[in-house]
Length: 305
Length: 292
Image (cartoon, rainbow over all chains, first blue to last red; front, side, top):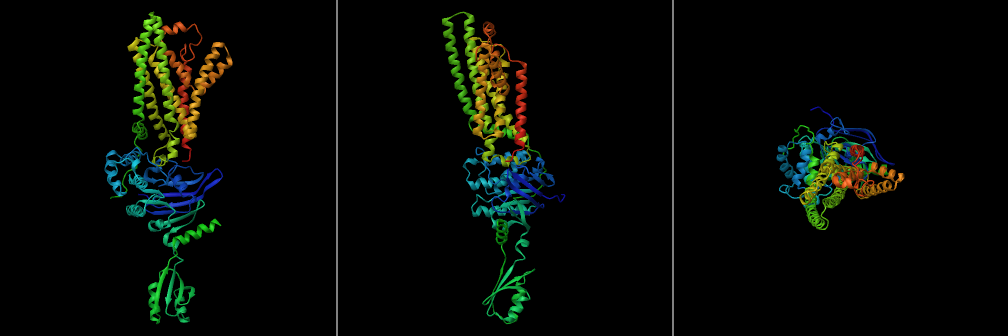
């Protein structure tokens, strides 16, 4: 398979009347990669995904799926999509809905028949496929929506707030599904405002604010660099500070606690050994990672003025 | 569970949306309710027709008057079918797009490799099938009853039914176009008003012709161009009458307000076909550009 990007957008703009929804958004998702699109409400996450699925036309810019422009319906052959707000025809049963989507995805009837129970099983709806959607709970409908997106074994799955209607167990199951997709080489673009969700499953995160990507990168790149270590000793003297400074910048000293901004590889084990060798009692050595939330809040607040 | 990605990329299977739309009509009991109510209507028509026809036979006795009575009752029955068929077409169409957009059922469907024009035409096809079936079956059954009870023979029943079917398509397509532009409710108001306007214009044109008022005639023709539904009914009505009745009423100008004494022009039929195609093209164009 050619290493065509699963998603590629360049300077995507979308203007609704006077409101600029996308302000030159550029994004790439490589095959098999799980990318989280993270941002506050109204940042342009849903608009981006709707442009990718052909539901909304971009005002300017480029967007392709596996190299095919999104304005061509053929671009959608290899994707599955879970919309943010959706409803299914409630007079269908869950199984019938999947059959309809199988036909729309061009699956052979026999292949669809075999695949449908598998998908129902995958999203935790085993045995419920014969019931009408009218009788489904919100969570079951959401699961069916995810099943619909995975039905035809797409190479890219676009999930717009997939866990919004789910309880904690359902959320965990969705994360498991996403991990299984990644293990199977499927690319995922996950829209979410839930930092923890993105943090747990994504390889890369693009933080979106006001219609553009304000920061993107691997999770450890985004949250790394600012890693701090909090060290508590029986005493802090000049010799201790000198020793600590060899492992990073001393940021703060409060009584017996020193906060050290470490760089590069995690120095904790060596630091511990060195301190003990020098005769200090080590009471605590806690790596304090800057969380994605800190990065996110910093970026989004910064631009919100 | 297996998630390997090996399925060849394929096109949507043909007519999936048409089948889905028809299945919806069946599942929502629309078809069942339609059939039951239509059966009641047909039964009443049969009773009324038989009763009035036998009364007429007792009272008058001349063949000509009996044919006149049968003509009036048949045209009246088919007039009702034209109204019911018109409303059925409009009601099928007014929310055909807008309600799907509003409810959010469209997003997942249109994110499939399905072109929007295909979705729209497939939906039109399903509703067109239902509407045409309705007027043809209902009109046909009424004509069969008239024939069984009174031996009634209209000028050309097949052309009459074809024109009624064309009228249904005109109203359906008008409603579908509106549904790509307005909300379901607003579209309902617009389309039903246009239907009423066309009906009124038909009467204005008739009166204008009777009293020789050119302005009224022109208004009628203009509205018929914009919404040819009533003109198509009047065309159908010509073929529904008996030749004897037509010959007897030919001395009056233009027949009655509700039935025409002259056959529809070829231009009317051609324009109506173009009208349907044009509105469908406009609907496709409009829908293809819309942000959902």
